[in-house]
Length: 149
Image 1 (cartoon, rainbow, N blue to C red):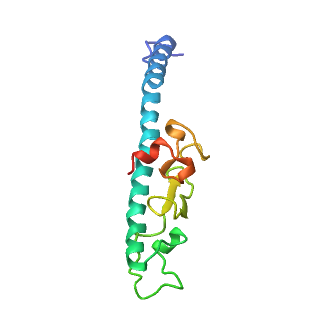
Image 2: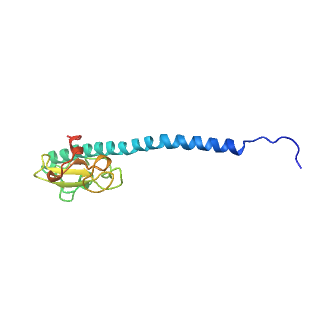
Image 3: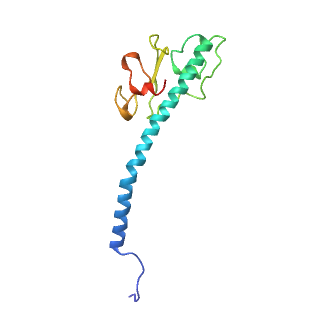
């Protein structure tokens, strides 16, 4: 049998500490995770802009836009002597939600192509974090396109 006073925290002290920590996480957590989502949008906008420059450089060298983004880093089998790639470092990046960028040659577009991400929700359209990001086809213009041009 022990005699003497034992050191430690009481159950009440531990519960109060846990409640305070829970409140802090509840207040700070949503603000922190909101910044993560908005930074994914900004990063995707930057990637689309960089891919645009690579596509335009490819066009200057080859005379037309590639039919697939893979031709920006992997020499096409039908490439002529003017191919001066790779035009990007490494493989074509995925958007920040792990999906491939949508790309198609579009002669009706001001740029000559469409290049975009479906955003956080992965489907066409949307607003805020779910808005499409990039240079969209003519029939589907959205506000996110204006941020890139």
